[in-house]
Length: 407
Ligand SMILES: Nc1ncnc2c1ncn2[C@@H]1O[C@H](COP(=O)(O)OP(=O)(O)OP(=O)(O)O)[C@@H](O)[C@H]1O
Ligand SMILES: [Mg+2]
Image (cartoon, rainbow, N blue to C red; front, top):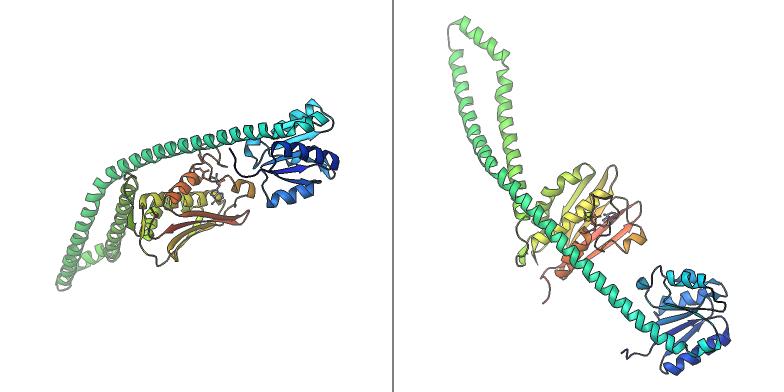
């Protein structure tokens, strides 16, 4: 039972009708706060400041038809609406209900007299609708979580498998390259000493043929280049090993406890995994600030950063810029991911955190990235903020408490 007095809004431009409706409601709800507006303009002004418990609205107000004010579906409106009209028509009734009105009534002295009862019925129905809506949302969220968990688990398994397969050959490639480097040094030394010995040789023909061969095989260049080639290959193998390491840490089970983690390091690892996705569409401006360790589950924060980076890359057509920065703000650390992509329209902005909301073509997006990311950030006691301008770009900010979530 609702203990607060009901806040009822009557939108009616006929003062006589408004008074009759008010009298009927006061009989059923003596404590209700009842307001009357006479135009669509006044209605809009009223609901901008107060969300009424219920609205009883005339179909035609002095400045237009009120049907357009209804939400597309009753479940999505912030409050229930009963539409009243002087001249009943089945078509209008159906239209009003379709547009989200909870009830539709044709004005008559009897209807005015029973409006209090109609309000009670509408409120009950509204409560049921709200419960249904909440349960549907909970169901969608748990479905999303399960799908994402499975998605992450299979990505994790795949990553772990690939990492394992690459790890072995990478081990001997690196070790062989190191030996090769040492051998190359020895060979270089040996050749140098031989050259000095040849210089001293008195057999001019031998000296000339050796000098010709040296030129022919470009020995000076080979000596310089083979060292560089080995150094470059060693550098490459170090990078591959790093990626393998990241894949392994990424695929580790996520149920682990929160630890004090260096988020800059965590971001670097994530970047190694997603850099490929980014590099063809955007320059990356990385500005990792001086931040303290943060109590968190670093794998999960990596997952959030990865989702944001992939989204940023997807938002850019042609070539753009993605700026990734970390900073400390009071007792929080902020990770911001900004892109110069297509931006998000105000109507999409309301939905981007909903599970399964995606504007991407089938197969490219499941619409889970942001839903899961915001869930992770919330569970860390933080916030995921977004600002965007269509055509200019979008900035997401992950704000995490340094000390972790308060228990
Ligand atoms: N940086 C961005 N710029 C423009 N639009 C974005 C950006 N990030 C998210 N969006 C919009 O929000 C929607 C939802 O994003 P979300 O990450 O939840 O799902 P997705 O990227 O479509 O699919 P998934 O991440 O599951 O593969 C996107 O489809 C896109 O319309
Ligand atoms: Mg995404």
